[in-house]
Image (cartoon, rainbow, N blue to C red):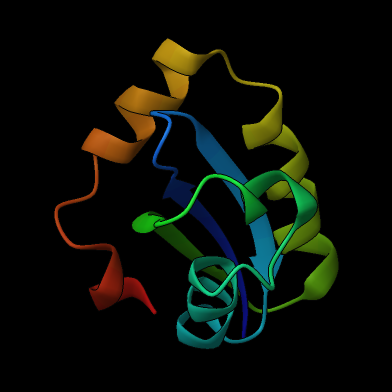
Length: 87
């Protein structure tokens, strides 16, 4: 499976990414080994996950989420009760 995820950073911003292993990737972000954006913004917390059968579908959705405004991302995050249930 391929996943798109959103984490909340310690500075109250969101980071959206793609992975095949959500738990590993969130741990990497938290350890400061993830994306350059999240390195100085730890700890991060998983807020949202979507699963896809194909990498291309997941990456397309990642791009779409990255285009959303902060308010739209917040609404998306709030629409999912428990992101760990998705991953």
